[in-house]
Image (tube, rainbow, N blue to C red; front, side, top):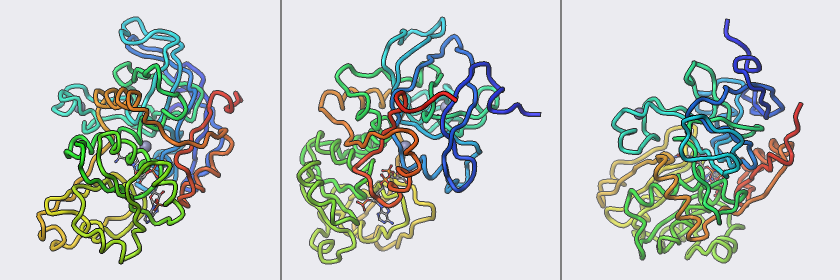
Length: 361
Ligand code: NAP
Ligand code: ZN
Ligand code: ZN
């Protein structure tokens, strides 16, 4: 019979977990493996709340194994390293994003694209992990991970407002680069002004792009233009505003977490424009063939980024002063934070002050 989360590994750990599709999180005691030769063990300091945490906690993608301890925007301080670890020493500040494992030998892994490996292991809810046990994320006291999946934290990057870069940052940086939207003067749209969306604006601006925000929340206009330095703000449900922007953009990063019409977004692309989906609504989106055919438009997707690119992104963010706008919360606020995120009421990322608010059972 399988051992319980509390006894399957030798090292005691604790955190917050959802136990069913209500997604409600409450304290959980579990365990983590001993530090292997290539492993880095670290105390969690901060962890961002990504909308994927909520999709997973509620099993909206049908792939959740309970109990699930979310959290994949994790920053911490190293407390122990294995005998073969080369990149880190005790006391170093480190980050872990969405991945803690991959096969290390397939074509994707050999091209630094562990994020597209068929055998990738998610930071939480990933089965099977080495020995077939479940992975637990960063809403917890500490983590242990193979050093390949651990990021070096740039010295001048804040730990709390930098944490969201480990998912929101790389998920927006990678498609801007890959789809050629990282050039000065590119006209880039960002759809959905939440955690990913607001970082997408900052990344695109750091590349020198002209950024148009598409939002369902007119109340976010002033902040988008003044605080986040977007160039234009369009209420996506306003047909007149949408028509005025017709055929104007080179590419769009769509971060929306819920079902929404994409035909209006395709209409604001120039010919050859690219609509890149990074948000993952629960149900399929609808596309009319004509909306692609007329103008050779492309609908594409992108998932986080490989480890090499994630490090490159952190260094880029440190150099260009890109961080998230955060609301720092204690862990017992996590359920309220999730509810508020679902209502698009977050400016613009919740980050849990784990070290100062998670109490040992
Ligand atoms: P978030 O903070 O909740 O932001 C999502 C934004 O989408 C909201 O703030 C809202 O912006 C807009 N929105 C929400 N419901 C909408 C609706 N019904 N119609 C139109 N717009 C709506 O979420 P997030 O953390 O940025 O994550 C966004 C999505 O990306 C999630 O689905 C998440 O799972 C996914 N994700 C994907 C990857 C990847 O690798 N591809 C990585 C991380 C996250 P406005 O108020 O401005 O309309
Ligand atoms: Zn995420
Ligand atoms: Zn692989």
